[in-house]
Length: 126
Image 1 (spheres, rainbow, N blue to C red):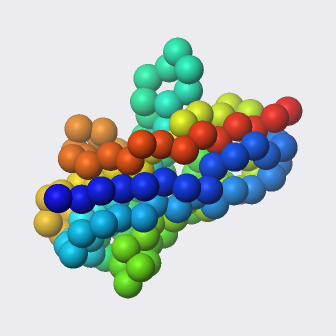
Image 2 (cartoon, rainbow, N blue to C red):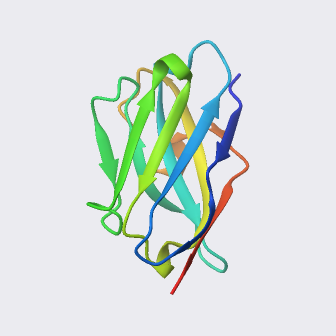
């Protein structure tokens, strides 16, 4: 029903910035809350940020609050994650996810999401 493709990952020095994009296919994107998760080697997948279907509500993990910003452009079927003041501990594969519940407000739980992208690698050097 929904296909997601992440882009924008890469290698950056500590203190630098990256912007990740998640392009969604489908005609009902505007109905869905969206989230970003990340997974580092040997660690469990963790919540990063989420945004409600309208963009009116956002949620962040404590570890990224004040540094990362999630946003969406429903006209472009795209969700963004602006990452500033990057730290080596931000190194991970970042995944975009869609909650297919209509008009969702967003969730910190990975099991709330039904569609996932393939991920994009973010590496922060010290």
